[in-house]
Image (tube, rainbow, N blue to C red; front, side, top):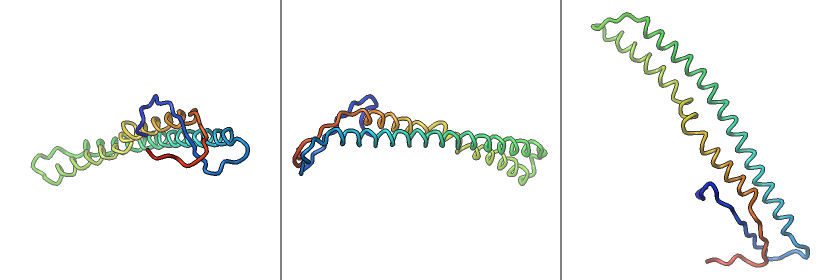
Length: 137
């Protein structure tokens, strides 16, 4: 995930005991299919997250409206500490209910989009199969 979004990838697979037939087409297909599957799962997770966000937003807005209505119905008794605390508690509780949908729509969706793009690029990566063990740099 640390690569820039527009990165183009090359995947090098080192096989110690090479089979008699060239394994590169099979390995390439397997790797491309794997990352296609991962991109599909990420897209599905994004769709589910946005559905959860819309549901949470509907619940949060409804609860916020009820809390603000309830706070508005309380009398403005400047000297009654209990009523002031209750009114502020209702207002704060209503806004706290909006925390989750706001988090989804501001922060949680874009890492999934980024991951999906990287999987798409990995799905199109050029794959090279080489005999022998990987040489450490």
